[in-house]
Image 1 (cartoon, helix red, strand yellow):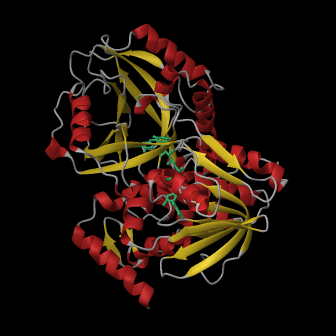
Image 2 (image 1 turned 60 degrees about the horizontal axis):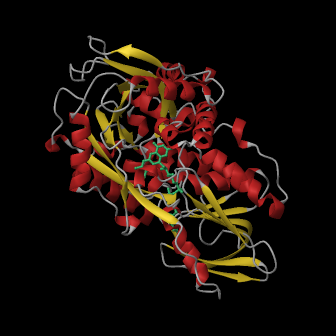
Image 3 (image 1 turned 180 degrees about the vertical axis):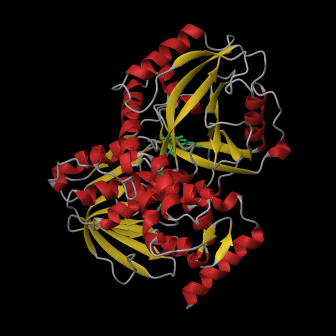
Length: 512
Ligand SMILES: Cc1cc2nc3c(=O)[nH]c(=O)nc-3n(C[C@H](O)[C@H](O)[C@H](O)COP(=O)(O)OP(=O)(O)OC[C@H]3O[C@@H](n4cnc5c(N)ncnc54)[C@H](O)[C@@H]3O)c2cc1C
């Protein structure tokens, strides 16, 4: 089903470099407008920043302090759009903001939350904000220090970030785009008003693709792509416009009961989230640190670990210690450098760098910044910017569900119950995981199955052969890491021996 090196077309309208959220979002929008699209991703889809986020679909309450009203308004509106178009992987979440009168005064938070509720059209799906007492035995107060007497409650959403990328890639492919993973763009030049790109596959084979338009969605590597071009151009590269800002997260055993999250204020004016993660865990993050190394090897530092633990321990009753940390992840935000002194106040808004389109130079659009939350709108804006060259002005994605989103009444709980009724032998947790990862796509790999045994080999922790095969055949998964960390998130449960067994099984499949 996937495009192989031998099959793909050598001439396209748009070549997208990068299979993160922005690249796959743009590929989907472009192919839906009737353009011939090819996307190349050097590793796995969502292999970089787009699987290392805080997994929030949010307006970004703290950006109000930086007067980023445009970004917050757009993100709040997109929250609603994504809830409608991907109700299987985007879920409402209540956030508790404990009040600390030495940091922001209550009146300031009240104004901020009022704006948050009203900047975009009032949400149909999410309750508004309110002040709440915390010096009591409410579930919200339980994990917090007794000194915290009041707080605020507001709504946002969480998302499985890497699955959002996969669903965009699937939809793009279903509409005719060619999606190539483990395929790196290693050379770029212009030829007769078009781009000539050299692509290298994992097996070492090389192909050239001719494209009318180039979209550089390489995230932290955006300027590496621009530098590939500079090799063939007389123009020297401009001064860097990219600011790489690292953010890290910790995972611990579940710190409290409930589906709500905490947003904790720090003395340095930054905030840290504590959110429930996959039933059994809590996730703590994030940091904001300027980054100068290779984005491919980013990892948490001891200072970031201390910072996150101190933030939580300033609010939570039961201390979280370094030995409680089960896992960490780090990512690099590819931000547009707006010459702010502070990494945490650098704009999160996206900026397009467009060149060419006149004379003999074909159009090139490079993307800086952005959020998972605003990817769809970013893609729409990118296609609008390119419309003078494509002639395709019709936006279409705001009401187009992503694959698996056609749940009855758009209700994930209803769909989960239905799945359990239709497949009564499926353990409750497994049915729930399938529903929240695949939505109605789960029905495709469960069709005709009558028992757990009929799901094939069991790799542990409710991962069966039928799901693994689905991921290989329909979701570009090729190794255990793709499956455990970006498709199913079962990696936290798998032992090294189980991971190795899965990897060996996958390799045997490739050989046969
Ligand atoms: C710690 C952290 C927390 C965040 N939290 C949130 C959040 O809660 N909510 C939110 O909305 N946003 C959040 N963000 C922001 C969001 O994650 C990013 O804006 C978004 O993921 C960037 O996506 P991208 O597609 O631009 O980049 P990436 O996901 O990095 O994708 C770029 C891709 O290009 C590929 N590539 C590079 N060079 C080549 C080449 N030569 N050939 C082929 N492929 C190439 C890379 O392998 C990579 O997969 C967070 C970011 C970080 C770092």
